[in-house]
Length: 373
Length: 202
Image 1 (cartoon, rainbow over the protein chains, first blue to last red):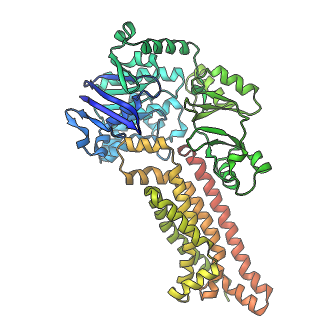
Image 2: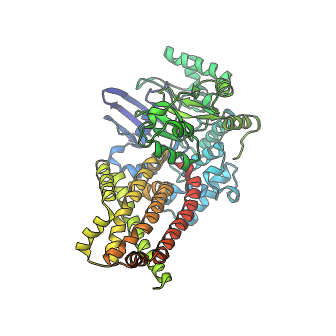
Image 3: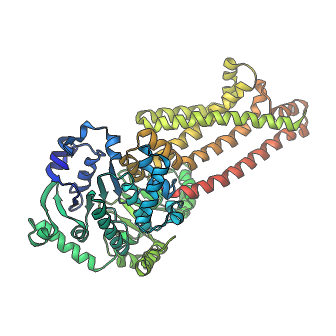
């Protein structure tokens, strides 16, 4: 159904995908997994042409996708992303109906679809259809994200770490739901994750990638019993270890943070703080990496008009990695003079922020399930 | 001199000017956002216009458009372009990349992404540009009297000529009041919009 033929992609001189060839059957649940930077997300995005390969061909049902109009191709492929990506200016109903409307379905038809889909995940239409995404919990939002991808009943659905930002319990429920929906609707799903437990649970076939190449493509059983490469067995071990501790910093952080480039000027930054109602900005370098923080107090005390905030930043806030244990972040939060902890990705970009509220909320969700805001 | 009708005329001039500036400014902001190598040129030009003294700008426009309301409206439009175009551009750029990615991945065309996702999410910032333009225009419009336009510049100018403080104040106070009222109301709306849309932007 989907066939990769010697697909390569380079950014500058760094190869991201290296002569990739494999095939996905109709109705198969395929999980792409591997360490950061192995090319799994790039592979996924070449399927709906969000990324164009430099060489090689991709066929869907025997048709070369470069011969298709990219906009029409994408309307025929469901797409779910980690950050959920529900449009905050649209209601739940409008969000689910985006693709059906793009395809010019009549109103009664897309309304019936929204009804049925919400019914399928036990979110009654009357209660939920007219809410805005911000009124839903993280788990509910991603349910809607999945429904949105299903709405025009595309035969293929791409999922890019869809449950990576959810707490373990919600993640578990959603994994079951997606697996159930896939069995029922017989979709072909290509799913990216870095979580081996998730891969083992969901996949018909796991594709393990490293440095743009496939190390092993096998069923979960096969991969567990005969890992083809030390990296793969190492990856499984690591996954099992880290999961025994439960939550990571990434699970308890909030991802909505106000960031500003270091060359922003002081007055503009004060305006930005006012308009977002915050007292601190996270300052980032030109390459998006974390530079430090600047508070309204710093700006008032030392800032002069026209000065760049890069000159005023401090490193007063504690910093943790997104994969660190939540307990570590918790300790940092309690002992620090600031009321928050900065969470960084592996490449030093800002992943989010842990505040006392986000921490409490995450714990509440673990104890009592979804907490609605 | 009927103060009420002068105030109405003043507001009318400002509204027409701001309405035209919104259309042009948003258009320029979108062009700057879409065509990367044009962004600095467009923003630079609107900023240059901003630095021309209003007296000089109106005198220049008068040569082309003659005396009357048209000239002051054109002048106000030129001044109002900068805040609106710049805020549109910044607003569009600041929409969360993952939302742009989602919109593209779902098969929206460039125009659909703009109209359904990017512009609605930038609207609070665009509105804030419109507010600045409106309040600014209310005071600059007083200069219109020098090029034969109507509005509250008339009593102010007549007051200066006859050395009558009462007359000057009778023109100036309504301008200040209007500016304060518009600023207040529009700031309230702006705050509501910002709170509602804060999820969709960086």
